[in-house]
Length: 179
Image (cartoon, rainbow, N blue to C red):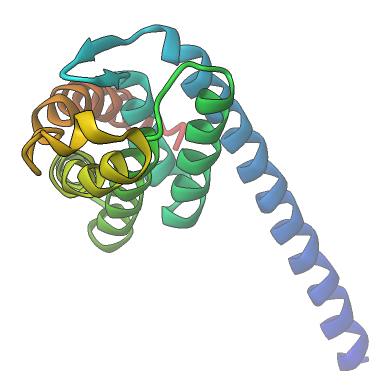
């Protein structure tokens, strides 16, 4: 009898896990769509196409879905934007590092404000520094004439605005018990 109960409980746990995974994938897909469509809201700064919507999505993904989903979503969004001609190769380091750092910070602290700081630092500082070698490798000689820190300012402009908006949305969702 105990064995039957254990089997039934295991089936129920698997259903809950499958439901949770499906729900996360659906939310992730929606956020990727918002990120790609939001790429039309962008402005050029020093050779970088800055799109604050990606950073809004990174903060929301970090809070709602966790670091692994946030990084995967940042990669997919960057890939789709590049295929569609809406972004540059520099979208990859900034968005993915920012999403990873935001996800880890939220997982450890459960604090939305520090998550926004993690996104801004990950994208603006670390992502900006990582963009330089990528620019040298893939964008040619023009990029090699730039200082290694040239991408930090445009990345920071985009990510600070996006992180603030994402933080406000996440706090609102949390206060209304949606997340």
